[in-house]
Length: 401
Image 1 (cartoon, rainbow, N blue to C red):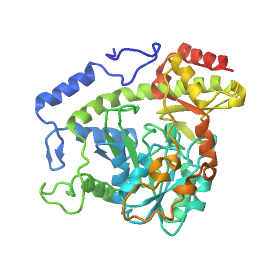
Image 2 (cartoon, rainbow, N blue to C red; image 1 turned 120 degrees about the vertical axis):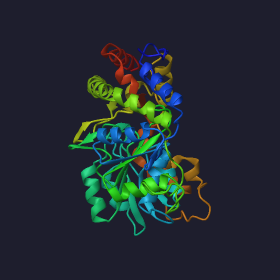
Image 3 (tube, rainbow, N blue to C red; image 1 turned 120 degrees about the horizontal axis):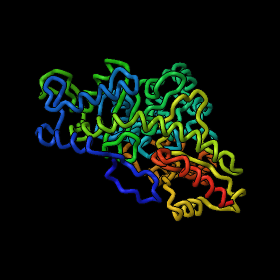
Image 4 (cartoon, helix red, strand yellow; image 1 turned 135 degrees about the horizontal axis):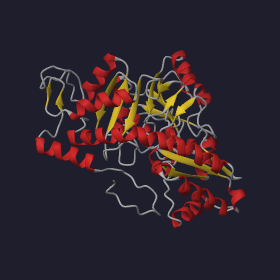
């Protein structure tokens, strides 16, 4: 039973919770152990257990939980010694955090255009963006759809580059037999309020290197070392720890995830087949080799000429008036004022970036600019609805022609 009331035409609401979450939070509050402590001196146990449980879900050796997905990317970058003047290739179609985390390390993001069908980073464009300053690639699995990771890894190996996967949308995604987050050096996840596993805020980094896991842990916990004296600080670090209350909530949400994940994948295929039958509608195509998809959002691209010249704003407006849940599309990074006007870190040379001023013109990023102008997104909870509800959306979109 959910305590959240349905307000959008009886579509599922998010988050979904019950007495399990309430009791878990109550237990932590009553215990008085509201933070995790540290490896050599646990105060609470939920954080340490959650890290093992999430690592198991993602089939990784190590998980380090942090306070949000942005610092998850930043922490991985810092642990890999990405810094001043280094360049990091990032998808242009993503939330600002994929690039702002790079800015936070005093490095320079370089934006890569997307594939017009999968809507994720076009790996065929990566090599043209590599310079002597390039140190890493951040593939973003938009909507849970994996980037072409095997080809990406070949490029990274050939050019001695790190890969940090932005998996904020991709909990449970699997590509060619392997969970995302495991193809590169590290995978960064978010548990923000709208994510498919959520505690309101939170994040995690997964990896398979013991040495890297130790460095990441040290960075997110004030430069400490595992099992060492808690007031000994061996390197520069920050405090990005996740608290016990969030971890307790995540453990209960994690229990609900497999069933929800399976239903999303089943309904996404059904919904997509129906939508693709509509002339003028293109559903995000899963990258060939994708076996499971996180489906944090469900993007569709429309052809205005097939819908009497309807604009994106009008399309959203009509869906919202019908009380069909929608989600905003991310503006391409090159369009954001902070990048277009270079309102970023003082003292950092951004002159070699492929954005800023005239370089932020849409003509320099033609695919993502076109896709953004004529796409809408549905939130993941819509894929938990009944097939009758999904059918009603398809019929309504048909009526807009």
